[in-house]
Amino acid sequence: MTAQFYDHLSEALENLNHQGLYKTERPIISPQGNRVRIAANRLRPGGVVNLCANNYLGLADHPKIIAAAKKGLDQYGYGMASVRFICGTQDIHQQLEKRLANFLGKDDAILFAACFDANSGLFEPLLGPDDAIVSDSLNHASIIDGIRLCKAKRYRYQSADMTDLEQQLQTVRTNGARTIMIATDGVFSMDGYLAKLPEITRLARRYDALVMVDDCHATGFMGPRGAGTPSHFDVNVDILTGTLGKALGGAIGGYIAGPQAVVDTLRQKARPYLFSNSLPPMVVTAALTALDIVETGDALRSQLFENARYWRDGLTQLGFDLRLGEHPIVPVMLGEAKLAQQMAAHLFELGVYVSGFFYPVVPKGQARIRTQMSAGLNQGDLDFALNAFEKAGKQAGVLS
Ligand SMILES: *Cc1c(COP(=O)(O)O)cnc(C)c1O
Image 1 (tube, rainbow, N blue to C red):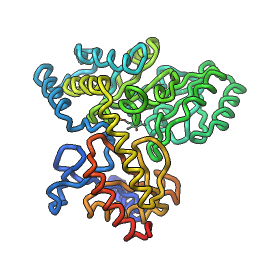
Image 2: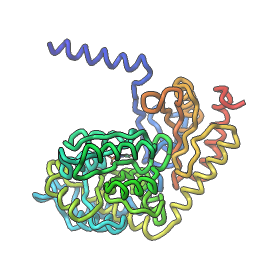
Image 3: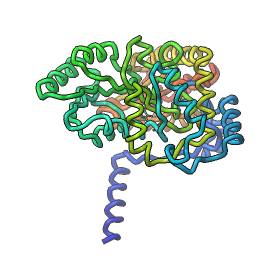
C-alpha cells in the first residue's frame, strides 16, 4: 500500500520532469542582492547579476535594514513562541500595524506570517453564503485558495476585462447578494500589468461592491510615496493586502489593511492569524525601518524607475519584444518554452541570473524571460546584462 503510494508519487514527478515542468533550486551562498554568488558556479567568484528577485528597493541586504534587524534581535529576542493573542504581541508588532495603516491610508492593519496567509485568511471570516466574490482570472494562488475556503458565491472575470467584470456584477445582482467583493492583484506579476483600478472602483461604486487589492508587487514603490497602485491611480479601495517579503525588506510577513471593523473581525476570526506564530521581532523592527526609508525619501524609488527605463530602452534597442508598461517587471517575450529555458540557461553561463516562465504559468506560445529591476542594480550591472542578452539573443536566433 505505502510502497504503491510512493511509486505513484515518483511516477508523477518523472512525468513533470519529462514535460520540462520540474522546478529545481539554485543555492545562493551570498546575501540576496544585485549580484549573488551561486554554490555551483565557482567560475564566477564575483557572482552573477541578479534580475529575478522581488528586491525592488534593494533593501534585502541594505545596511540600515540589517542594523535594524540586529537591534531588534538584541532588544526583543529571537522568537515569540506564541500566537499573537496568547503572548506573542510586543509593542513593536502594534507599532508596525499602526505604521502600515497610516502609510496606506487605512484605519488599521493586521500582520500575518506571510501575504499567502493574509489572503487565505481574509475572505472566510468576512463573507458567507449570502455574499459574492468577483475575482480576476489571473489572481495570485493565495487569493484563489482564500476564496475556496470561504462560503461566498464565486464569480470570475477574464483578467483585466472590464466588460466581463461588469457582466459578472450584473449576474451577481440578478442572483442576489448581501455583500459583493471584487478581488484583484494590484499588479499581475507575469506581465507587470497594473490592475485597472480606476475602472474597477467605478464599477464597484455602480454595483455597490467592496474592492480588495493584493498589492504585493507595488507597495513601497508604486505611486507617490510608494503607497501602491491605489495611490498610483489616485483611487480609494476598501481592503489592501501586502507583503514584507518583496520591496519592504524581502524577509517574510504579510498584512491586511482596511476599515476598523474589518481588521477587528480578522483579529478575532482569521484562522492563519489565530493559529500561527507571531512574526519574529527582528523582522518587525527591520520592517519599521523599511517604512522609514520608504516614507522619508524618493531616492530608491527614483533609482528603481531610472533603472527600469534604462533596461527597457536597452532591450528595445537590441530588438527584443517586451511587454510594454511602466512597472519594474520587464518580461522579454520569446514564444516557445524551450527557447525561454535555453536562453535563461545561456544567460546564466554568461553571468546573468534570470528565470524563464512558460505554460502552465503563462499561456502556451507566450513563454518569456521575466526580468525584474531593483534599485540595488547599478549601470555597470545593467550594461553587463544587456551585453549578455545581446549575445544570448543572437545565438538563439531571437536577434538578427
Ligand atoms: C508574493 C505574492 C504573494 C505572497 O506573498 P508572501 O508574503 O510571500 O506569502 C501574494 N500575492 C501576490 C500577488 C504576490 O505577488
